[in-house]
Image (cartoon, rainbow, N blue to C red):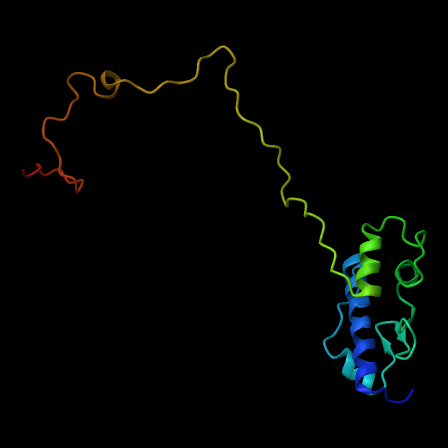
Length: 156
C-alpha cells in the first residue's frame, strides 16, 4: 500500500472516475469525488466500496456495494444486470474512455394526453360576429374617444 507515481495515479484516478460515474448513472450510487488521483497517489485504495490496485489493468479490483454492476462492466458479464440499458456503451465509456452515453429521454412530470375539444358534433364552428351584432342600433357611441382610452373627444 505504498505511494504511486503521479502518472499511475492519474490513470487509475481517471479510470475510477469513469467507473464511479457509470455506477452513479446506472444504479444510483454516490457520485465520484474530484481528487481521486491525488488520494490514490497518497496511498488510498478504497473508494465507496470500490477496491483498486493502481498497477493492475483495469485498476478496479472489486466493488463490494454493487457486485453485479462490477461483473457487468469490468468482467463483461452480460447476464449480471439483464435490465441495464446501453450496457455496451457504458463498457466502452469505462474501459476504453469512450463517449459518455446519453441519458434516456425523461418522462414528462405530468403525463397528460392532449385532446382537442370537439364541441357538439352537429353544431357548426362558431363564426365571427358581424358589425350589426357588435353595435346594434341605438347603442352606438356618439362621441369618439381618443387613442389614450379616455372619454375625451379626439382632437383633429
